[in-house]
Length: 332
Image: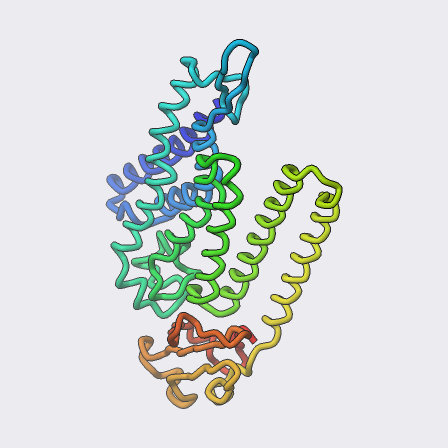
């Protein structure tokens, strides 16, 4: 029941909305891809994807028990359902079909839509781009730099790897696989700075550190459960308090760094060596230049002497974001 509710209800809502949009397009002669209907369906599938995928993959693992005579397998998610029974067969069949629809189908659908409008996404001069062409999918790429048009799909798979795909792995390896994925995501976030502005890069970096810390705490609890010795005993309350303190400290660092920003006028941007931000337009022609020329080339140091992906990163900004009185954030 939970699997059917989690998967079929969103698909049913999406089908009804798209049918209504199709009728509207046929009667009033409007573009099927314009308006809020298609965008709403895509947003519904996008935001429900992690939770839905978790429920789908929970239908596969089984736990083995010994009843004194023989070994019996039950669903790990529901010990009242025997894995060799007819009910589990129906659940398994539905889960397999929905696995192709949600954790595999939805990211591929998003990738196809992004690839179809790749040129418009790469050449955009604002976060959302041209509303006439990109309004439907702007919620996907608005937080990412122009040349990383594929980044939304990469982020979707990152979230699925951390919360859904690991369910298919044996419990003894789940935390180690999750730790490896979290560390890889942390390094990629640190090195390539795929987001639209540096403050979002910093926020993503802080969030990645928090995920790694959470996984480390889970590994410590597993070690504590395996090693039955007073010397290795760890109080869960102490571990939780330490994690909470570290998270608050990281958020404090993030807020402090974001507040310390270089001067935003073009002369200061060009002279600020700490941020290495160079404005390609002067104040005299900034407001009159072609939108394609209004670009800020930012090579911002990350505080530890590392480079951002080994090269300068161009972040096209809205014209308001580089006018005097505005601020361009940096990593400090």
